[in-house]
Amino acid sequence: MRFNFCKTLISLIVVTELSLLGCTPERSLSAKPTEIHDRILTVDGHIDWPIRQFLNPEFNPSIRNEPGLADSGQWDLVRMEEGGLDAVFMAIFTVQRERNSEANQQAKAHANQLIDLTEKLVADNQDQVEIALRPEDAYRNEKLGKKSIFLGMENAYPLGTDLENVQFFFDRGIRYITLTHTKNNDLADSSTDEQQEWGGLSPLGAEVVREMNRLGIMIDVSHVHDDTFWDVIELTKAPIIASHSSARALRDVPRNMNDDLLRAIKKNGGVVQLCFLGDFIKEMEQTPERQAALESLSAELAAWSQGTLSPEESKALFAKYREINQQYPENKPTLADVIDHLDHMVEIMGIDHVGIGSDFDGGGGLIGINDVSEMPNITQELLARGYSESDIRKIWGGNLLRVFEEVIAVSSNK
Ligand SMILES: [Zn+2]
Image (cartoon, rainbow, N blue to C red):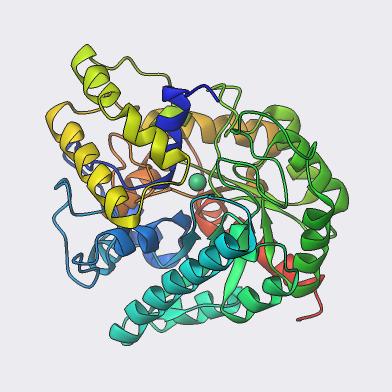
């Protein structure tokens, strides 16, 4: 298989935390966005802190990590409070490796480890945060002044070929499952693999969709091939989500949603959540020095994309990546660029089908919106563009939790 540097790089960006460098402009917030955040429930539908914590065990999420430093990540409890963010869906992410029973068992064990460390975070900070399993948990916690952590699974790989694992992970708290990551798996075709394998959903993938409907787990179509999307939307009895995808009309990459997909989600009653990953927002020129530095990692990136690096080797690779980002900062799109995607989605779908899935700690981060402490900047930009408080409430999680309620309503776990 020919190695595709760009694609591998994009995969890397999607998977791991990157530099938090940044040219973040000084914030000059009027009181209004913060006041709105006090009045509404705000939800970020996709943050990759668990894998970041796994790869950087020395990171302390209970303290304020100074924004902009290489090892600060983009989420911690203190900055979440600063940003007026009430709830997050933490991604329980596994990189797609081999598909045999031994590798499947390892993926399941890895997902369990990531859930364990998220539960530990909550246990260590019981006064501030709780695991949430249903929308009402988040609304209740917000009234009590507590934050909520929901669990989503990014890549269904840990299910292996055993349908009973859907119930297993439901019992562990998983409330959405992204069917694939950057490669095909036993359930479905991915949008970024070299070639299709199933023509959409596999027969097992179809059973998993039905089982998710039965249990009340949201089906996440970010990362999946368009053919998988169409199979899912035909089969599902409940609304679906794209937890972190933007608009293909503005940036033509397979990870974004084209207008036909957006219209289908509207019809289905679902939600598409804006992703803040630079390459999905706008094509940006990078310096030759940065390009050359990234090329020097190409062999390791290829190995990583094949799933052959150990966690230690992956950690070393990510450290080198951070160094390159410090030395040769990435030329990133801005907050205004990503809100252009939102405007387009609203034009196609209306206000009831959009949300926010930053992908912080998984590659997300733009000029003006580079960590959770900067969330009010989004609200400020929405106000400047004429969105009402009622619109903003829907964008900031109201739509996602409405979908979640409908998913529960069609399930047998009402
Ligand atoms: Zn992703």
